[in-house]
Length: 189
Image (cartoon, rainbow, N blue to C red; front, side):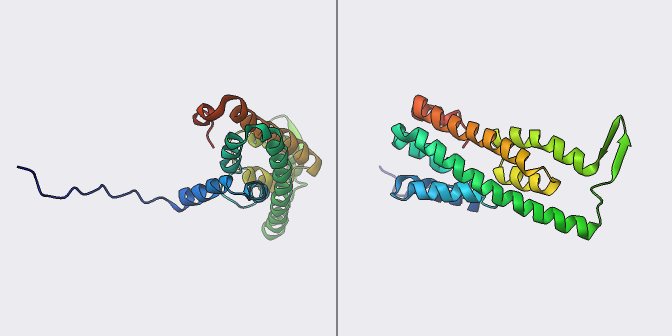
């Protein structure tokens, strides 16, 4: 005798807003507007957008591996442009915080063998962190806005961003090109 009770499917998991947004962005990679979408996401990644451009870059390179170099160059340039927007947002925040909180960036610190102003300490040393975080899977907006907030000189931020974002875009794009879909599980994008 057969059981006549219907089988009930397990309730589907409700996706978070972030995961839904990520999946929507990733779905753009298979449209005719993929390059434009990647450029836009790369620009706003440096300032406010929570989804990295690699959500588009990876499927785009997997779909058209011969264009990996083009995608890496375009993504890097757009990301740098977005980084400047983020940097200037951070600079505006810094100027507002300095005047509101009455922080003296010229305050001299002479302890533990250090003899420099607060502004010098933040600006000279933060660029190395900006370089490292531009390569690692750190949200670029944190790097860009943070660099502006602590007053990293623009030329140092630019150098860190060019080096870091170039390495990141070319590395992700190149790995996808040369190792294919199996490499996707190695990269956290």
